[in-house]
Image (cartoon, rainbow, N blue to C red; front, side):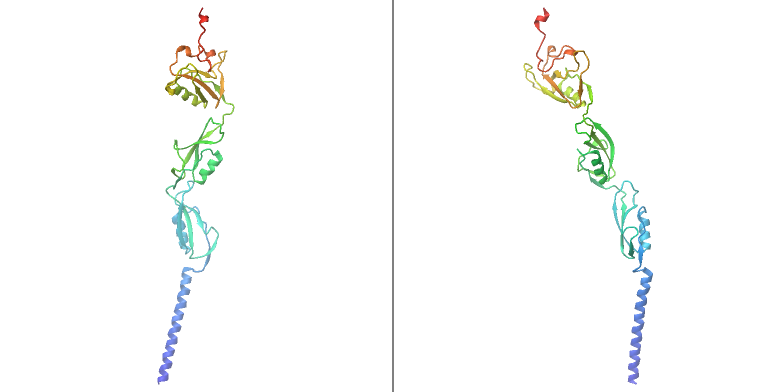
Length: 284
């Protein structure tokens, strides 16, 4: 009787173990079938899809999704710009797929230093920082093709200032002095301040000095130009020409008298002769 009971016990134990093993194996087989675990699939092209559409597509393929963001001014907000693994990669389901989407708000980055760079180098540097070249203007300058100023919304912007990606930066570029010529401006009878404002428009290099006998200069900006070289007119009364970037010598006096200036267009007194006055013998 006891042997029969023992055989029944072990039989039941073995049957229970067999049932448990069957259920265990069946569960994981069913789980694998339901989740497609271990199944290899090809990663689809997600670029251009919205973040929501790309995420839904990946979830339907039983992938985990990790999202990053950057800013591309040429793309619509929230669209997928990059993906890892890339399109066409064959991977097992269940792994993580990273997508990079376009940010709704432009990121702010430091303004690069474009001064003295060529246009091409400045354009490339702006592109690397996801910015664009705006308007370009040219000014007379010996450094032909070099960036002289960088402007944002019409105002100078210093290197390092934070600025949104996608911004347009206007450039002021030197066009070289070349052989550009123009009429010599007449700055005699002007104060130094007034003369400098006019001379700067022509990109000339002023050299000011005081002749012997002109007296002490107490306030240079308010002193007057009494002579200049080159003169505005030649002996025939025709305009003299001068090139951009050339020197112009200016003789100044704090409180000039009428006789300190040149008497006519063709005979303006040159520096070195500013104290020459009419010969008394000529009046006789």
